[in-house]
Amino acid sequence: MLEPWRIHFFRRHRDDDPAESVPTIEFLDALPVAARAEVIAVLEAVAAAPPPAFSGGGKWEAMRGDMAGFYEVRVRGSDRRNHRLFCVLERDAADLGGPSIVCISGLSKPLREAAKPRDYRRAVAFRDEFAARRTVLD
Image (cartoon, rainbow, N blue to C red):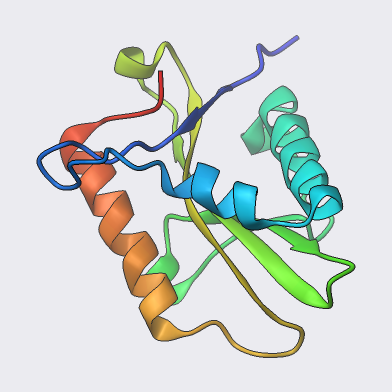
């Protein structure tokens, strides 16, 4: 049986953000309780599968275009909003203790509305910061 992957939350480096914020925690804290629980449950199921073997069922999807390289947890909340958690996979991550899902950031948007380009740009910037700094919440 395959070992579950680790789950990490990207933490901003003090040189980029003196508060060393954790965008995923800020995103999760802003969600309704049921949506937060569902996002976490999907994330844990993906990690246990692990990701290469997980069949998404619409809840875990590879992204394309400018967001290629990201995967997203997709949840529809009772608040009539879609919630997305953006993650990257680190298959060879000795510095993270082994194969890992790194949660970068998230967004919430009204149903049937496209995400704003600035939300995607922020996620890409955070991913690039993670790639350069490799900082995660301890």
